[in-house]
Image 1: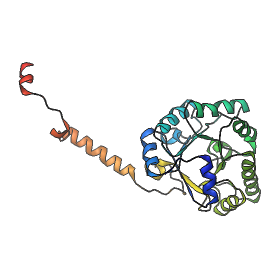
Image 2 (image 1 turned 90 degrees about the vertical axis):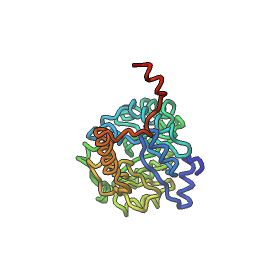
Image 3 (image 1 turned 90 degrees about the horizontal axis):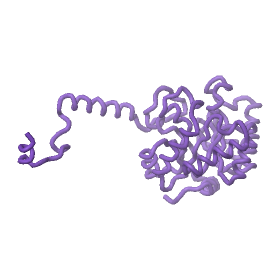
Image 4 (image 1 turned 180 degrees about the horizontal axis):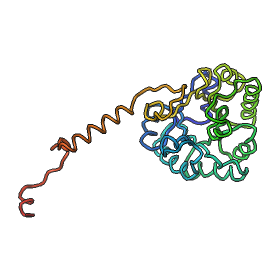
Amino acid sequence: MSKITTATFMEKKRSNDKITVLTAYDFSMAKLLDDAGVECLLVGDSLGMTILGYEDTLSVTMEDMIHHTKAVKRGVKNALVVADMPFLSYHISDEEAVRNAGRLVKEAGAHAVKLEGGFAVRTKIEAILAAQIPVMGHIGLTPQSVNLFGGFKVQGKSEAQAKKLIEEAKMLEEIGCFSIVLECVPEKLARLISEQIQIPTIGIGAGVGCDGQVLVIQDMLGMYTEMTPKFVKQYANLKMDISSAAKSYCEEVKSGAFPELKHTFKMDDEIIKKLY
């Protein structure tokens, strides 16, 4: 696989070549996914729940995002690395939005940043783009707004909501975003949006009509089971595999079955005798 860039995203949209995106939060997973051919790795603020154990994404800090993005970047050769801008890292002012986006690129090595929202964050996105930092938009269910929405709910089901999402998608394209995540949007609406804009849409709970798909890696691998959204497909059940392996390890350590001779290092018996 050749190096993926934001320009590659546009080429894939034009050629109707679906884009593959998964989240990653550490070096070893990033390397595995990159080697497997995943085209974009999103260092999502979902790490707050899947890695740090928070109830939602709101507690994630810039330092958290920089730390994990650095680790992911070290494991990547070809994939595009996109880093989430965490809650309150871009809401206060355009200047702060640019400063924090710049940190994710300059300090952490991200190729692009993602931030949630439409019209409400237009000037922030424009300021970041003016600083030559690529932006992936994110509309529909925006998890940082979970308290405002009153929970994790499908967005765009009413006519007014649907029209707003269409208008926001067109606005994000107009100001220069290279792609847009559509989260928890009805399939027909997501397909309509994808047809009406020239930049790729990346769906999560938005149906097959999007130009690409993204899932949280722990959801996809069956590792995070505290909450399993309807849109998640589990491609493996690593929770069971890891649990079984850990139990076997504990049993073998306690019984003395591990380590065996093949796992140990030898020493000359004559030297050992001199040590007694």
